Image 1 (cartoon, helix red, strand yellow):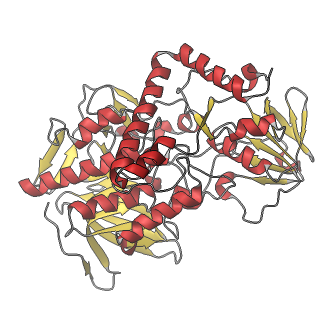
Image 2: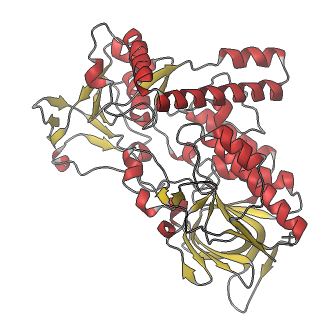
Image 3: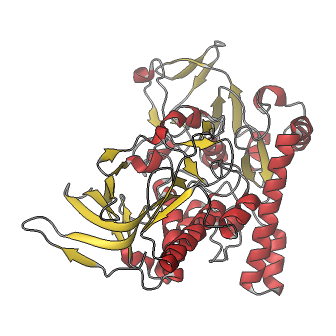
Amino acid sequence: MPPTDSAAETTGAKAPVEHVDVLIIGAGLSGIGAAYHLQDNFPRRTYAILESRESIGGTWDLFRYPGIRSDSDMYTLGYRFKPWSGEKSIADGPSILEYVRTTAAEHGIDRNIRFQHKVVRAEWSTPDAQWTVDAERTDTGETVRFTANFLMSCSGYYRYDEGYTPEFPGLDRFAGQVVHPQKWPEDLDYAGKRVVIIGSGATAVTLAPSMAAEAAHVTMLQRSPTYIISMPAKDKLANRLRRHLPAKLAYGLTRLKNASVATAIYQLCQRYPDFMKGRIRQMQEKWLPKGYDIDTHFTPRYNPWDQRLCLVPNGDLFRSIRNDEVSIVTDHIDTFTETGITLKSGEELHADVVVTATGLNLLAFGGTTLAVDGRDIDLADTMAYKGMMLSGVPNFAFVIGYTNASWTLKADLVCEYVCRLLAHMDANGFAQCAPARDSSVEEEPFLDFAAGYVLRSVESFPKQGSEAPWRLRMNYFRDLLTLRHGKVVDDAMAFRP
């Protein structure tokens, strides 16, 4: 798959068609990482990034709610090639956004981004061995077209234009303000006001202590609890290593340590759930007021890591509860009223501001329609190969990060594998590659995860298989062997000139 010259082709009165060797969808954490790997391995290859929004950063530019931060440490959420130099391991959103933007600027990646380009359709032509990609200019409404030899989706897996909000009875009667974290108003004034946050996930546990600093009181209303543990905001070992070792070496060692710890905790939760439930409870008893009702408010019905664990830096949520700044209420909503919420138990929560931290809507590949030789692809009929390509879809890769570890750990591995794949094609004169589905491999859900946002949409996603290379592993170290060091050629991957 030799590189080609970037050129604009004009046919009659039609708009110019720009051609690049590789087209990347999304200028967030994954897309900037993909561009770095591509230009580092293939300096002569042309590429462009299509970004539907007006700026770099993806998730970290979209979400602007108080206290937004990572729920993974930055030594694993950061890029392998770009050491995180911040003092905090659990970093705030603006610092992460600056890290992504700095990375793009340092390597000239920002010059290859086309902002306000929302990809709506991508069609592969086998005779031409290339993709034709249509994008809508969100600023003008114009449709523009690109062609590319390889297409890479780095758009994540949820909808950027709207979050998930259930139908709440009586919501129209509420006289206060209702806000979803995905569309946080810059001018929202909650100082001295009563705030109710509906939700129990990472967003809710971030918002509650952050808003408590100004609000009169914050109540976190949850239907069921989540496992929540505290983690130091600063990694003492990482900061110590940086004082005595070269930055890249210190970063690499910390990254390895943190990935190992995260994997070990996940495996312990899966193999010894009762032991880990007991251990989490022991820690919570130290963090919460004596006699606090942990069974009701902090003990889920499921086992640890059947859904994602929530991390709070330096125990800020627990400290806010001890200081009576935040209350946890576990109940179901009966109806909204003019002044707040009436619960099924009959209790009334008075509120001036209600935040619906009720989750996300999933959307595969940013809603892009994929087609091969004139036939639209039903994603539910495809199977994911190595968690990064689709059966029957040539020259296409995607990044979906881990649900049990940092997103970027998987993103880096996927990008490395794509570069190895392209190099193999170059060396052997191949122009096309596509995984061919094995009918003997049984189907399983793409994301084997019990979170509500997954269960609502997983049927519209590709399937994974019951065995390798179709099984989507949530294990960084196994993927490390497969994607960074494993064979590029196997029985499932078909190549052609």
